Each structure stands twice: as C-alpha cells, then as structure tokens.
Length: 328
Image (tube, rainbow, N blue to C red):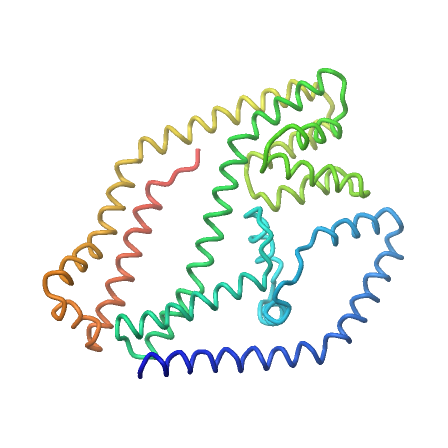
C-alpha cells in the first residue's frame, strides 16, 4: 500500500468516525441542554443560596469545550471521564478533554504514516503501533507535566507554610493566611491557594476547598497540611507552632528524597544504558548494513521478534526503575 493510499484511508476513517459522532451529538444536544439546565436549577433550589454560589463558582472555572464532538464522544465511551479531567487539571494547564483526544488522534495518525512510509510495515501492524502511540505518548506527556508541577509545588510549599506561620503569629486568621500565600507566593503554590481563597469567598467551606485542592494536587505534603488544620480545629492548640514543625518535617523529607536519589543514581544510570543499548546497536547496524538491519522489519517473523524484544526490554527496564524508586 502506497503512502497516498495510507493517508487517504486514515483520513477517510477518521472523517467518517467524527461525522457519525457529530451527528449524534447535534441531534441530542438540545435535549441534553434542557435536561442539564433543569437538573442544575433543581439542585440549586434544594441546596440553597450559599451552595448555589459555590456551584456557580465551580462552573465558572471549568475549561471551555474546544472540541465538543470529541469531548462528547469521550464522555460516552469512558465510564468515568472525571478521572481524566482530574489528571489534566494536575498539569496546571487549560487542557480540555477534547483537545487531549485530538492530540492523541494526531499522534496516532503520524505514527501510522511513519510506520508505513519509513519502516515499511504492513497496514495492520502500523495501525496497532499508531494506536499504541496515540494512547501511550499523550498519557506519558501529561504525567510528566503533572509530575514536574507537583515537584515544583513540593519545593515551594515549606516556604508557603512559613509565610502562613508568620501571619498566624501576628494575629491573622487561617483564611487570611491562605489569602496572603496566594498573593505573595509564585505559581504553582500561589495559584492553588488563590483557588482555595476564591472558593471560600463563593461560599464553600474551608475543609471542602482544601480537600478539593488536595485531590487535584495529589501530594502527600499538602495532605499533611490539610490533616494538620483539621486536627487542630478539632483538638485545639498552638496552630503556628504545629505548622512550623510541619514545615521542618517537610524540609527534612525533601532532603531525604534527594539523598535517596543520589544513592540510587548508579542503578538508574545502569537502567538507562541497558535500555538504550538495543536501539544504539540497531542504529549502528543500519549505518553499516542497511538491508541486513531492515530485514528485521520486512519479514513477518522479524515483527514477532521485535514485539517480543520490546516487551522484554520494557519489562526489564521497568523492574529496574521500580527497584531503585523509594518513597521516604
């Protein structure tokens, strides 16, 4: 199959799929809109004016639907799309579910074209590879962005607690301390605490706002902070001293993480080297004898060997990284 036929086939399949779901979405859009408005109105009347204000504030923070057809399709297919929404929120970027799916489809299409045109793989194998690339690569990118933001938040969080401790010692309440952190600290700490402060102004309780942020951040340090505030509210005591001790514990915990990372650096370097050796040897063989190396990709038996080798490589490297990963 030529490159033009592959592009035509992939484009036609995607267009037909989007047309089907777009038709279904348009036909049922008005009925769902009326039903959702009735549900929201009923819920606001049942909860009262304060809860309604909180709900309105939560609705205002939702991301716009840049790709409504794809987003509707995902919400119909996935059993719990809120899990994906929470995962995208952890990146700190305004990534809609439709945009995430659109990016996955583009990556899958590019992978199919590259596999058929450059590697010469048959179309069924290329489609499977494109499907795997469209699922794995966006998932990995979102996870990396969320992890990078989480690490930055963890590094800045002890300084935010110290700022709150100074405010408590000067006589400010907890809510004002949270507002001062949102004003003085840089992102991502500042934006998260501003979100908590805005939720409180809109009528949401402090506990609900804190736990909603804890669920979005998914960090143990912030969970410790929320638990400390809840325990102090129930038992009493010197909150400033308790938070000061928590800040010291978080700093020691961060130091322990760096020490563990330094001690396991040799094992991680070994995993990187062993994981890159097969690809390095393949590149050398392609330079020395291109036809000899490409026989592995042109022969159906080579496809099976490549799949087994890649699976074994990923399993071994994954086990090595799991062995050197510690949680102090």
